[in-house]
Image (cartoon, rainbow, N blue to C red):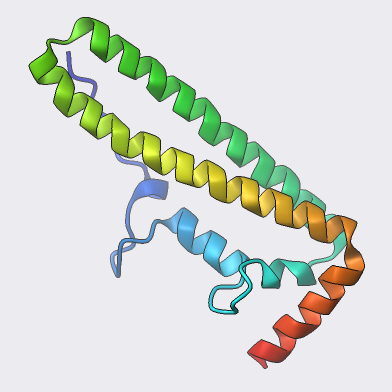
Length: 136
């Protein structure tokens, strides 16, 4: 039994490289090229940081829920498919599991940074000033 997994736009590589849209969005949000991975979010007002933290937490939970679902698929494949056909399905699923785990970790990091800057406005202000100078 083979369970094909349809491609997801969020998982599709950028035509210019191997970066997924999620990775690209997070790079832009977190200050790509600044040397500080979350420098640009520090300039957001506290209410936006709160919304960002809540959204990132939801997306991290979504990634975990999808991981659990795919792990259930692994169990079904192992129980129902012959070993020679299960191998291909499991290799395919492994790639999806790894991607979801990376997404989860990125969302958790974004959540933690947004909460930190929301709770430490003085640090956020200093970092936002640095970010502004470095991009000026």
